[in-house]
Length: 211
Image (cartoon, rainbow, N blue to C red):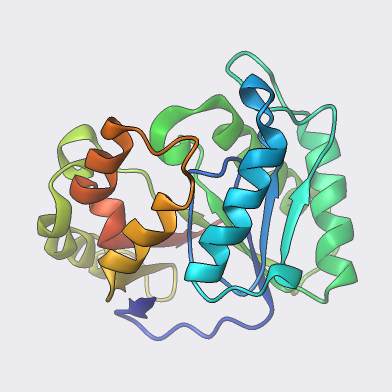
């Protein structure tokens, strides 16, 4: 449940993430099965539960179970294959806007960064002029854990970007984000509870257009 500080019209769009502990509200959600520790099936069901909390219909959530896209540090995801899969899905569902990680991936996780590279690869190689992609802007360690205080800094950052290239999104119901994350019971350990409570991402996020 987000509010845009600047008006942005989102048509048919997809949010591409890589793990079940990355949760956003969107019309379409696509992610890797995240089979770390052999818990892929459990985390798949947890994602559906979290999506239900966020009012995302199950039919609009796709979990990609691919042998080359298993979760884990040191496991590089092929950007060409990612671009091909994303291209196929966006064409199939007439999607004209993609939202994903930036090149740092918020937490620096290698799979987050791989997803960014896959989306950028698609943009650069595709002849589809009407396909847009936006990235979730990573912040430094101080801003990352100052909670709602970062709302003002994010708005200031967005206003200093070129018109139409950056949008600040405020979460009007952080408790719902907490509730959605709590559905991931296999990963809902004490430090993730603290992260959701104090992370600025629970209160505000900035999207920047990928050129």
